[in-house]
Amino acid sequence: DGGITQSPKYLFRKEGQNVTLSCEQNLNHDAMYWYRQDPGQGLRLIYYSQIVNDFQKGDIAEGYSVSREKKESFPLTVTSAQKNPTAFYLCASSAMTGRTFFGQGTRLTVV
Amino acid sequence: AQSVTQLDSHVSVSEGTPVLLRCNYSSSYSPSLFWYVQHPNKGLQLLLKYTSAATLVKGINGFEAEFKKSETSFHLTKPSAHMSDAAEYFCVVSADFYNNNDMRFGAGTRLTVKP
Image 1 (cartoon, each protein chain N blue to C red):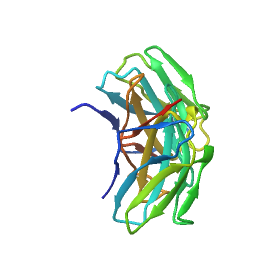
Image 2: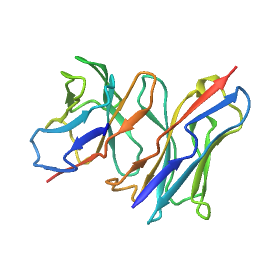
Image 3: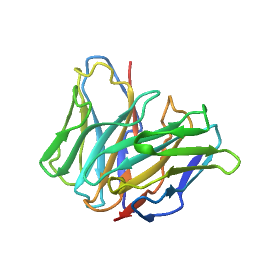
């Protein structure tokens, strides 16, 4: 089965800690994206990558970091610099001229 | 459980003619519904959202959608297509807008606009 896998579905973090959200795809897609959703808002783009070893900041990149060492993987690290990390995070991937596929999301809660 | 079905994988219109992108949903709750657009090599952009207020929702770029509970539909329309509207469009349903652990995306509709 081809698709995108995000793990874990629920994640808890203590204040001041970094945490990494996993996103893996086996669709051979070049482009991958990370989005954040907050109450009452739509999805907002954090980072995106169109090719291995390259990525660009989205609209709300502050307090986040990413890497794209492999085509299949695009992990997102929520750093302690992110002031309001509690949110729903969604990963997506797409071929350059094809459909976009979405993961099931990870809900991060800071305790 | 909830799901969303976009009835057309591809829609082609001529510039200046109306656009209709169809979306049916299934939800056990009063749903929140969204339409997003994705242009090539760009991220998702929110067009509009329905969260149990007015059933006719106006969005950006001249798009609007009407929530019809009796038909479980949330179709996206625009009176006159522009070349820049060519993109992929996603209908999304969520049981709880403020706690989106259970968002469901449609498969997407690719809109082509012919000159």
